[in-house]
Amino acid sequence: MSARPSALITGITGQDGLYLAELLLAKGYDVHGLIRGKNNAKQALVEAIAPGTVLHNGDLTDLPSLVRAVYASRPDEVYNLASMSYVANSWESTQLTTEVNAKGVVNVLEAVRLYTDTEPQGARFFQASSSEMFGKVQEVPQRETTLPWPRSPYAVAKVFGHHMTINYRESHGMHASSGILFNHESPRRPVDFVTRKITRAVARISLGLQDVLTLGNLDVERDWGFAGDYVEAMWMMLQQEEADDYVIATGQTHSLRDLLDVAFGHVGVDDWSHLVRQDPAFFRPAEANLTLGDASKAREVLGWKPKVTFAELVRMMVDHDVAEAAHPIG
Ligand code: NAP
Image (cartoon, rainbow, N blue to C red; front, side, top):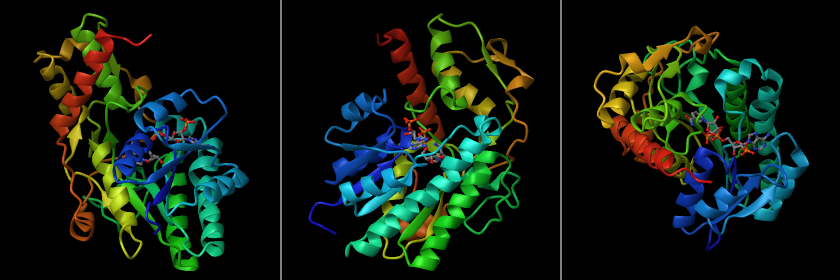
């Protein structure tokens, strides 16, 4: 590695990309990011949160743009965080999801392989895999060896990207690692995701700006952690001598009812039953079952463990959304 390491992040405008850029800048990296389109509205966000980041135009579906971005940033580490990440939309946008989340991973791997073959230093690679790959879970808790059983087009594409990452490691000797990431949230989670939908609605209800919150299945259980902790695990994986795959999870599961309890409790509402409606329209065609991760390998090999608890995470998100609803921007 050069004196000042360089990293390229795809998906830099997303939740994890922003946290990872902040982390790497704090560690003294030159940070580069791939951004879609000439007038991406989120460019200002990247510049505000991660000043000094160099942005390169590109798209996961466009191999030449990835090759250009990799050669221009001369990275020691490439983090592939870009994806079509709305599981619920993936039944409607199956082809696009496949192009980005499956074939897009091959494109990034190929760009990194070309660079590593032609430049003596080469680059290490991280792939953001997902606990959604376990869908119809074959064992509880899920670990690196658990058989995948994807239950959405998003998850099927993620399984492809995951195994392609392993294949490039085994076939081409690349330092390619994959984090099997369980759900992780933050105040930067888009409002289309159920956790943020809840914390935003709770904030607005507490301020008298909204009457009710409509949700799907309240009994869905997930293993939810804080995004800031998860990007640290990504970085730790690329510091290892050997590339490998790691489950990144809290090892604790909570239902949406638990989330509602903490969120409403934080704004002084103990009984939220009259404020929440259930609508079957929000149920998924095929729901993933109990996802619960066993991150003992990450704990033992990487020395990683989550720092922010479930209740702290939910309260952090509600506080952010109360402040935002009380003082809207623009
Ligand atoms: P996110 O906030 O939805 O961000 C997705 C990013 O991908 C955005 O920067 C988006 O750019 C970019 N992107 C989408 N399509 C692209 C394309 N065709 N070419 C280039 N960039 C494209 O996702 P996240 O929550 O940060 O998650 C990061 C990664 O972890 C994703 O791969 C996700 O699937 C995976 N993951 C996340 C979780 C979780 O709980 N958050 C769990 C498991 C796995 P635009 O701004 O241009 O749209």
